Each structure stands twice: as C-alpha cells, then as structure tokens.
Length: 305
Image (cartoon, rainbow, N blue to C red; front, side, top):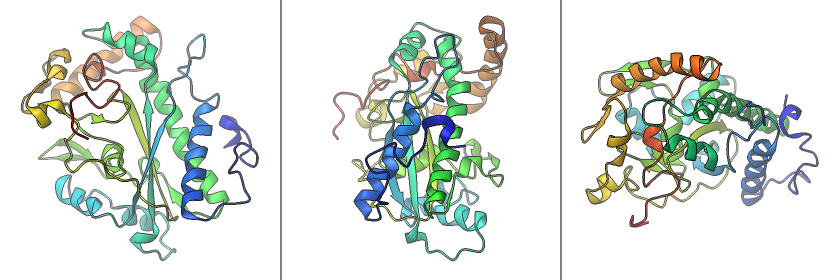
C-alpha cells in the first residue's frame, strides 16, 4: 500500500491537490510523488542502522510517441515494447493514442558511502553494494507499484513494464540477453543519460545508480535530451580515451569491443556464494565498473554537453 512508504499524499506535498491538471503542474506533482516515496522508510539497505539505499532521485519524462521507442525495436529486437504496446496489452479495453502516453523515468543514485566502499573492492561486491542490489531494488519495485497506485487513484491508468506479468527476458543473437522492456533505454529516451563502454547508463549523477519507469495515460511535456548520441557521455567513445571500467572488471568482461554479458553473468553467479558467506543474506552483485571511474558520480569533466 502507498502509505507504507511515505504517508498520505493528500497532504504530503505542496502539490497534493487542488489536483493539478496543467502540464507543468503534473510534472511537478509526479516528481514530488517520486521524491516523497524516496524520503520514506522503505528506502533502506536493511542493515543495522537502516541506512538509506538511494540518494534523491532524478526524474525525466518522454512521450509515448517518441520515435526512439520505434528505433529501439530495430536496435534491441522486435519484441521490445513501445509504450503504447505495453499499455494496450495491459489495458485492452482502453482506446489510446501513443501521443497520449508518457513514460515516467527515474534514476536512483547510490549513496556516497556505498560508492566509497565499492571503490576499495577489486573482486567481490562491498556489503552496502550487495544490499543496494537486493534491498534497494526491492524498494525500487515498491516505488514502481506505489507510483502506479497513486496515478490510478487520480484517474490516470498506468503500468510499470518491468513488473508486468507480460514482461519477458529474451535471448538475443546480437546482445546475448535482452528483454521486452529496457529501463535504461527508457531513461535514455527521457533525457537522463547515455550509455558507456560497459553498457551502464551515465547520468548527471553518474553511473553508480539504478533506474525505473512507469508508462501512464497522462500527458507531460518531455524532458529535453541534452545529447544527440547514445554514447555521448562516455569518454571512451566521445574522445577515444579512458576505458577505466575495463581495468575495474575482475573477470575481463569489458574490453574495447564492449561488454561480454556471459562473462559478467558467470561472475555474478559466483558473487552469490560470497555474499551469503560474508554478509549473511541471500544476494549477489558486482558493480565494480560503476565505481572508481570518471563517470561514477557525474558526467565526466571534459565532455561537451
């Protein structure tokens, strides 16, 4: 339930209505909801001191008829949903045009302490990082479902694609592993970042983060994309330098050719035993390529924005 995480919205923010229906007011209201949820008690690493799992989120928006979503079908695979496809599959009785939909995206940045711990590691994840992968992502799922619930309470039908029972993982000849919805691609379309050599999304808060999204029958003006290329924020691609994420990978899964997902996944499986034995909970993680690199916490200095 919504109240488990941040209380009653009918008084939790200045936009709590007098329900706002203009474009700018909707943008402000939705952003406030996401930030309110992240201020709630659910945002925790579930350690002894109940540290926050994530810092304040970044929020972005893209239109349901943005041509990038059609391009993703050609790039990722024909099975990759457009916003209209997942919405109409979820609500087959609702007639809606793609332009009437908005993709709401957010970035959850790792905390400074989690990143500091991860910088010290060379093979296995730090405890805080492993906790953010398990308990932090569990909170991200609650954020997805809570946002859907609040939107629907106000009359806006919505779906979180990654939580949909229709969501599927797919084998890909080109990418090895893919899926019917990519959170990172949605965030890229929503002006929140571009891809790096290791496939991570480099955002204004850096690459050490996780992302989430919801597709809603609501019209909000899109966030301007301050880039023209899907690799614009990566020093390796933009300026032919860096590549520090290659050295950070303990199994050589990142090279100048890109990210070897098979090697990466095999290492992730090994980390599960380490997390269980070292930290006492069921989990896994790595993320070493996301820390101790120039794009850890920001767009690298020197990139033309």
